[in-house]
Every structure is written in structure tokens, then in C-alpha cells.
Amino acid sequence: MRTRESEPGAAIPNWLALLTVVLFAGFASAVRAAPLIIDTVTVIDGTGRKPISEMTVVIEGERIRDILPSELAANLDGQRIDGRGKFLIPGLVDMHIHLKGGVEDSPDGGRQPASDRDQALRALHSYLYSGVTSIYDAGNNPDFILGLRSDERSGVITAPRIFATGAIVTAPGSHGSYFGDSTVDSWPEARPTLEAHISRKPDVLKLTLEERGWGARPMIPLLDLDLMQRVIEFYNNHGIRTTVHTSSELRARQAIFAGVDSLAHPVIQGPITEDFARLMGAKKIPMTTTLTIGENYSRLVDHPEYLDQALYVQALTKSERARLKGETREEWSRRMWTQWMKLMTPVAQENLRQIHAAGGVLVLGTDQSIGPAVHREMELLQQAGIPALDILRIATLNGAFFLGREGEIGSIETGKLADLVLLNTDPSEDVEHLKDIALVIKNGKILDRDSL
Image 1 (cartoon, rainbow, N blue to C red):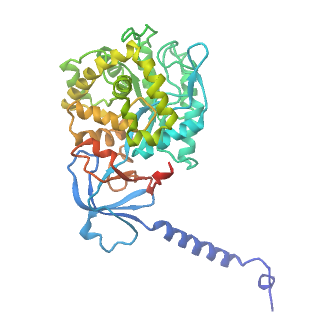
Image 2: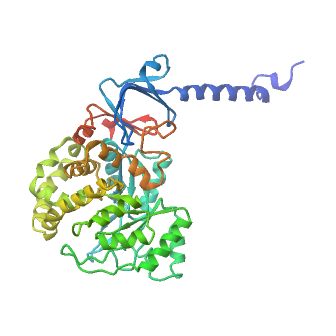
């Protein structure tokens, strides 16, 4: 007897439908499981250890599955990449940017929210093209940057991993108080403002402890120290790390003993004391380097030809480079700020060298919004006397430590997310070689750099 289920066009029996789903899922899983194998490569793992040659790195899905001598990997199945003569490093980081497109000048001379998504995407692509797979935005239009963060995490856009603070928390009228909706001046009255900020899930809280009055800048209000300590405690109690903008040894010390988790800038106002270098070595408070933002002014004025380097040609349009070499260079040549930063950048470089020598934790950051600046930052650190292999850790694993995510990213270790850069030349000899990129891998997938 024919049942309804056996008639043409009838519904498939439940057991057969289930079997079909299981078989299809198994097939799809098998396709996804095919590993990516980087074979016979020299691994520089980002921990500071010396390079190890003749290694094979196996990536399965989004993570590093195995790291083993190449002689033991000959029979592994998967998509193989010939790494002979090449060098594999973790993806680079920039732990202090302000992404283009979210803020613009207002008619009254201040700053106002913007939403230029195309400009932001071009900047994000310039990071990936330059080998940067993680960035931290240290203050921006919250709707704009947190929206892009969501799009990156859901795979809607091609971008580095985006970590962000959204709005900066500080005193009314202080540095970074562009929008006013995250300013605080008393406790416990600040709690509703902070709770609203936390509801948007910032990856790191950014505060500012800055009164200025230096480098031809006018005085501004300073965040109260007792209030800052309460804010830091409040965010830490919610599981959120904190960083603070300071520019002097005095304010950096005050922030450290108020409990901050990291410092957003080096000391730039003058030479540090030996005591401060030792303090940084003892406390292991990460300090972001951000030399490039100040040096960039005099670099453009004195050496505009840097814009003809390959990474800048890829990151900027022809008209953007022409404008920088023309009207922007002319404007910056007249600024007192340009000359002040030219004078003080070597001071900041020496301050960072001393902190590094004392065992402090430096983290690469540029305070800019373009991938090639990461490479300039490393050049300035090398000029300061920091060895190339140490700079590689500053630009990788230390950045993960800054975020509190050293268990997930920042080094080439089994189980970590596969954010990697394959280089044609040895970066442990000279950071200049970090520009010689063969391919970039983010989240286990090879990126098409030509399409960025």
C-alpha cells in the first residue's frame, strides 16, 4: 500500500530529512575543517623569543591549531603556503587611533560628530594593507565607531579587529570633552552618565588628566583626582580596563596611583626621572608610545617625500598626497606647535628608551588614522635605541596585554586567533623589513591586499 509520504511531491519522512541535514552538515564541516598550512617558515612569535626556522604553522578555522617542526608536518592535508625564506609574525597592532570620519571641525572652531563611512573604511583598509590586524580607537563619535565595531565583528566590513572606548570620560571643558555627554564633575552624580557609557560596552575606558599650558597650548580644566579614582574603580568593577591621557611625569604618577590600568601617551613635556623609569618597570603599567603624532608635523615640513613611499601611495589618494605636500605643509610650517614637537620628540624617545630598559611595558600606538604610521612609529622606536625584536613585541603581544586579551591575540601560540603576517625579509634585523609584506591573515583567512 502506498502511503502519502511515498507519493510524488509528498513531504520527505522526518528520519530522511534528519539524515540529509546530518550528512550535509558533516560535508560542510569537512570543507571548513581543511586547514591552512604555512610550511617551512621562520616563526617570530611576538613574545620576544628568538626566531625559530624550519617551522610549520597549522591554522584550523580561525585559530592556530599546531606549531611544529616542518619535518613532522610533511603528511598533513590542507592548503599549503610555501614559507621558505619567509618570516611569520603576529598581526601588528595600533593601540591608539582616532578613526577618520567620526568627528569634524564645527563652525564655532570646536568639534562635532560626523559620519563619513567611506573615509573610515579607507583608513581601516590601510591598516590591514600595512599588516595591522587590531586597532584601539581611543575616543570618537560613539555612534559612528561603535557601529563600525559591530559591523567588523559580524563580518559586514573588512577591517582590523576594532576595539573602542566610544566617548571619552573627563571633566567638562577638558581634553577630549567634544560632545559633553560623557563629562563628569562630581560623585555620585556621575554614576548615571557612567552607567549610560558602560551600557554601550566600551572595550577600554579612556580618561584625560590634562590641564595643558605647555607647547603653546592654553590652560583647560583638569579632571579631579579623587573623582578619577572613583571612575576607575567603577569601571574596573564592571570588568573594564582603563587608560588615561597624560603628558607629564607628575600627571602620569597621579594616574598610576589612582589605579589606572595603562597610560595613553609617553611623557612629552620633559625628561623623566630615573625613579619614574624604575616605577614603570616595577608596576608594569603599559604605556602607549604615540611618537608619530607629534613628529608627523616636522616630518611633513622637512621631508614631504615620505608620502611617496609605497604604503602611503596605497593608503592615500593622489589628491590627498598633493594637498598634504601643498597647503597642509605650508600651514604646518608656520605653526609653533610643529617646532615644539620637533624639539620634544627626541626627549620622548629617550623617555621611552629608559622605561623599556628598566623593564617597563611599551605598547605601539600612533594617535593617527592611517596604517603606514604604525611603521613610522616602529622606526622612531628603533632610532631611540630599542632593538628590533623588542619592538616587534611592543607592536604585537604588548598590545594584547594593553587590552587584557593576551590569551586570544598578540602572539603565535597554539589556540590563539590566527592574525598573522608573512614577510619576505627578517624583521628581527631591522623594523624596515616589516614593510616587506607577502600576505596578511586575519581570523584564519588570507586577505586580498590588492582589493583593499
